[in-house]
Image (cartoon, rainbow over all chains, first blue to last red; front, side, top):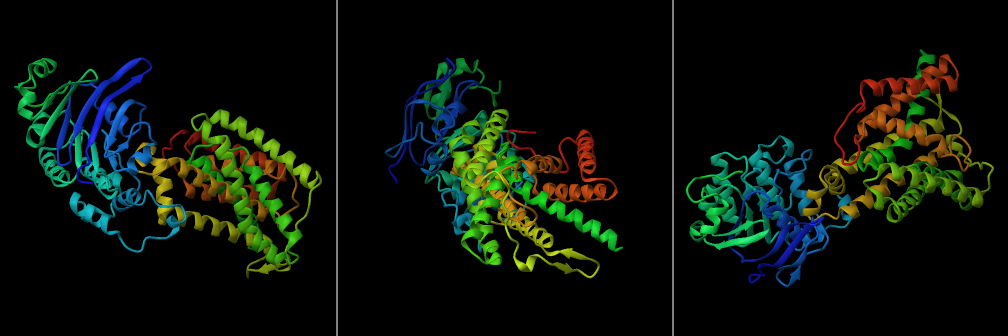
Length: 251
Length: 294
């Protein structure tokens, strides 16, 4: 498992003639905390959608030796590729624990599903611990704070045993304190996993990224460490010279 | 006092029949947003299942006990077949589903006519359900009491499955957020099929219960399908408790109108009440957001 990495080769997504992702190739190694940045419409979320099967794509995306593209969404998830959504997506009317249970039991057959759970599975308990929601386990997910929902989403990926985590703007709308905690959380879980973070928040990126890929108009514009990417004149141009000097970039 | 209780029981009894007919729809229409006009024919299939079982097992009591799970299975399998062949192709096209399943309903009625003949058939009630039971305040027919209990058990069972088991969590999860459920590794197609199986199976159970009240014919389902939809819509799409309240509410209302007028006028009056109610509260008694309707 240790040598497994996520490799994209010439991934292309077209919507009715509009090219949203135009031949993206990149490699993300295990233990890497890769940030995927770029202006709005650069194709960041679409790329994540393509890898997780929510949109059809051409090219190749492999994890280990397994081809991910154009497989069924739940099959990809069971292969160990998990994602979160831009707007915190949890099952709002179920409790924190039930949310994690759904994710943990996704591969079970229908007949075993009729048994009532007698105790909380170990991996669920562990995930609750990691995301720090242990005290809120019986709360309805809908009433959680925004940041807590995002952590719950990440927790759902953990109990699914996701080896690749694709996080779509995990800190959007979070307070500074929550951002920091999220960053620490990503570092904790990222050591043994392959993590890709789509983000607009440059401060957050500078604090926690180990490597950065910049997308622009569906293509990879630049790739490297935070310093290398910031020094890249093409990146500065795309961000109208603001990215390198000011904090947050939002368009 | 006795007259009042008698009326109340008549209402509850009517309501329990409505509830059995509507419970499966609350799943397939309420939770999944599929307008299945063949739901009534699944009830008919359940009723004929009871008829066939009685041909094999002489003892009416044992036959009834066997028929209930078997009717669930037959109704469920028919539903599964319908889902696999037609409905899954049109999840986002409710109006097309309506027409197609109506066609399926007509076909199933004709099949029943060809197999069992056009005249109605009768299923014998077991001896322990043919008398009446003294509840202290009034004597009530045992078969109606049985159906009342059966409907409560069915609702309880369904509620238990939906709220307490992992399967129920999965069904509710898929209803609430399909994309998230899929990326959490859940086969939403599989869950759809399973939900449809359970909903259609409940129609089968309703059909078995109806054989205790009257004779069984090919058009048995058409008598109930409109009422069943009425109950689900009035109760609020997507909510089982709304369906329960609406079923008993409409049953009691119908019985009360019948007491003072005739059955036909009572029906008209109930429809009028529902129409007015939906003008004031279009979302029904309870409401949550579902994926394709409302």
